[in-house]
Length: 358
Image 1 (tube, rainbow, N blue to C red):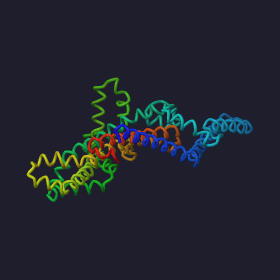
Image 2: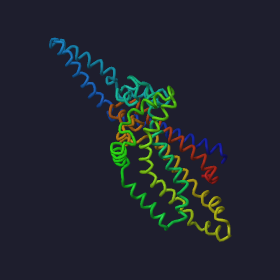
Image 3: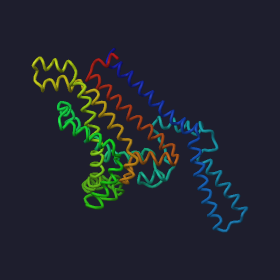
Image 4: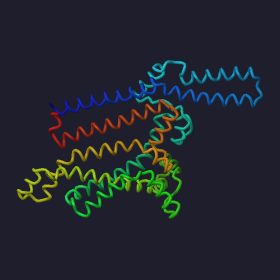
């Protein structure tokens, strides 16, 4: 089977998976009545507020009843609740698959994005994505680089004091939630020591207006991002080190590694030509999928640092039943995963040519 055929088949399968994920999301939102339930609650709140306004203006009971009924019917038509769920969802599904994400109908989404309402879904995503990359993806990338550099060394030194210390560190950090560690660090290094800020919301301005003054914006972004990045690195570095250690350790114990050493090959040759080449597929998989997954954000950690990223955007979209934003985010996250998987397929063929025949 040729390389082009293999990649084409992988691309078709992953594209089909993308469509299925979006379709299932639409079915879950529409068929279960999730969006209708929340929108009815929103309509009731808006109608009560409108009714209170009419009472304050001393409208008669008959006028209040008539105007409230008209206002309710207007809202029902506005939110599409006078149509079956599949009629409401069909244009959203088609528009999402064609990258026409539409407008957000949630004031909360506009608040998270940091722009006036209404906001295009694509704009909201593009404004929140850099914040997540700065806070979370960069931290995960630092963890990956450190783990790839130190992990193989730990595997070679298994059983030593250094190895046991790394394993203990990984066990300790796995038991501590990153958001809890963030609260401790904000209190100690922010309020007590005064080394870092205690309010991080202002970073939204410097990220959104980065091109207005890149030098000043970079300085402030680095100042605001330092503590969140340090927190995430400390919380996840142990897991990264332990994972890379475990992957390399399985290869180090293989018979062909011992045979290569028995032949008298230099240790550097054994490591580069045998150990790292054999361990690279699972390591590369872990790195790429972890970095892709980091773009989804951390809801609780973002709330601790008041850092409105992708996790916060997804949360407010769900709680406000903002279907265009939910579909847009689901589509984007799935597309990122699909691209990561396709990248892995290409790398696998390079790292292990046997993959193309599977």
